[in-house]
Image (cartoon, rainbow, N blue to C red; front, side, top):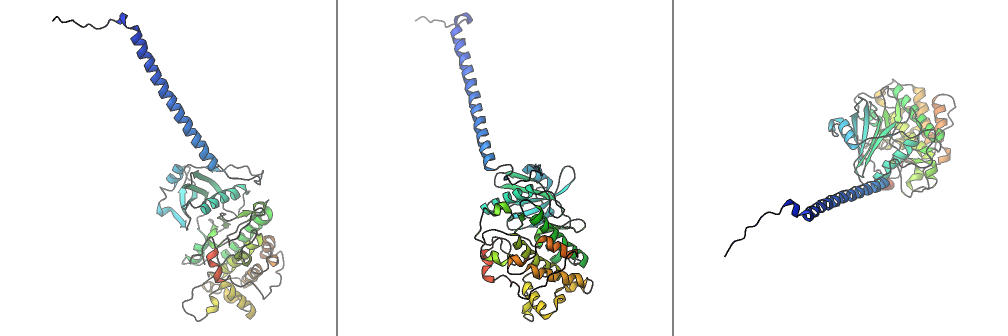
Length: 394
């Protein structure tokens, strides 16, 4: 057999082969590019859907045109860095659904960062509700300012507020070894009254807070009080279109009409809560006080005890004994009587925020206080609150 020697094809002999290789390379490149474009379009489509599900600001047409929205939208990474990865040493407070941390922005400004912990639908509603209400409010020296927010899915929802260095009224009354002096207590009562007058009478539409209590009153550098936490609040225009069948707010601060469910949240419900708050500030006691002995069981309920003192003509016995005699007796009597006016069972008989401010400033006479006042909330309704009372809130 003879062997045949195979030789390599010459370049001039295979132009069709080169064209085939070139076309194959172009086809693969085009297919890869098309696949990348399709993936990019798919990503943009899902990103668009996520924005539709989580709008930048869920505001209604009721937003005041005099207050254009300029809330800063923070990234989660920026707020995590500002709080040192939510370091426990930066904690300012913690509740069932949220934790608050002190943060420091790159420009050195201190802020309070509220991080929602729950992914429940109610928590999501409160987050969007607080954005809706605070973004629509014009600035007030009696309401904590909302500076910005973070919204990255349902697990990364944060609100950024101005920093209040003296913490909450709850801590100042019950967590401090040195009690607040009388001048500061009276000033705080007046500040909260002015906050309610602003929300109820100066905002259009009016805003009902829905959860006035010591932990929602924050104290600034000079102990100026500002109200916070608008998760349960309603703008009046929205409230008139909605209804609730369950109790809103915190047990012991909730008006009697709200225990049985009410068609809409009204300003006078805030005034009832304010009446309880006044008694708490003046007495330094919680609304429900666990007694070490049954010697004086009438003191267990702050509101009921105050009613008994009114009937006995000895209201000043309610004043915090830690103050000794270092308080203005005329102011203390005025505050307690004003609280009793706010605690009347019939909402229409309670004073509004404007009248309360004028009474506290001495610009209006204190109306006569009736002896028949609203009793303390019935125990059987405690389980109906969306925010169950903890021992430190009572």
